[in-house]
Length: 116
Image 1 (cartoon, one colour):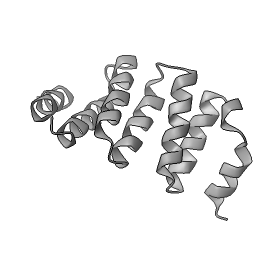
Image 2: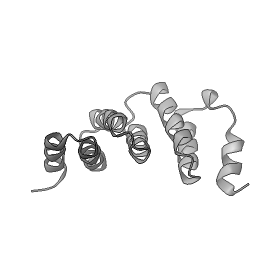
Image 3: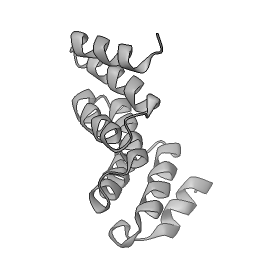
């Protein structure tokens, strides 16, 4: 068992964890290559405390890696609702819209994200 797996096992039942602990657990799952589990931890953190831009950003990125651009876009929009100046969320949102075949919407988001 590697270091991430040992740390993951240490946390215990996710339902009883704080948002910060769930986020760290999601990060550990992600680094261990367990993307579905990472998404589940980030989603649980987002449900416990909606409106945390960083959690929504992480969720959106992982969902994108899992090939779920529509779900990723929803999470990234939630990140931007919480922090409208989050450039990383803007860029990932544009990318997810492009991957989802929504090219005109992707162009709008890229223009919003990139400086003139």
